[in-house]
Amino acid sequence: MDKSATIIILYTREQIEATVKRLAGEITRDYADKNPLLVGILKGSFMFMADLIRQLDFPLEIEFVRVSSYGKKKQSSGKITVVQGIRTHVKNRHVLVVEDIIDSGLSVNYVLESLRNKKSASLKACCLLDKPARRQVTVPIDYTGLTVPDKFLVGYGLDWAEQYRNLPDICYLEDVKP
Ligand code: IMP
Ligand code: MG
Image: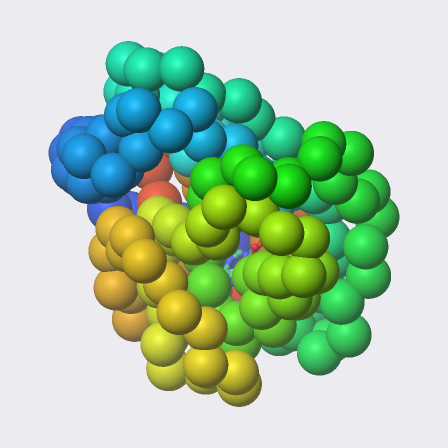
């Protein structure tokens, strides 16, 4: 861990919990009778997915895809690498892509496009955090948790160079040289 990093809390665990509950309410209204397939984008979404589905009291399934675009940098490389693709059939399923944070939009756009022609019954996206400042592609987001400032965030699943995912609050780093 970078010892020079100053970690500042932006959203507390209580704020995160309230946001997840609100999103779960919206998703429940739309999916309670649809046995949806929630597709989390790894690694960042694992904690959000775990908390979200525990607030969803109806039949559902989960799947994960793993994409990578950052490497050890704080800015997207712009090139998406699929590390693990989806293994579940999506035909006739109501698919909801679950993302931790949308920044350039390239990752979620890539995953949505890869699912687009697979004859799903519906295809929507949900993100906990939306960082619109550096969006490169327009992505339709159907459920948004919090709109966040243009800072590099860590914690609650989000990493910087694979560190800090375990922080229970969402924080930003000051004084870190990428
Ligand atoms: P995008 O492709 O630029 O939209 O970035 C999406 C992915 O990059 C997310 O799934 C995150 O894993 C990661 N990411 C984007 N912004 C941040 C950040 O502020 N902190 C940590 N990871 C981020
Ligand atoms: Mg990441």
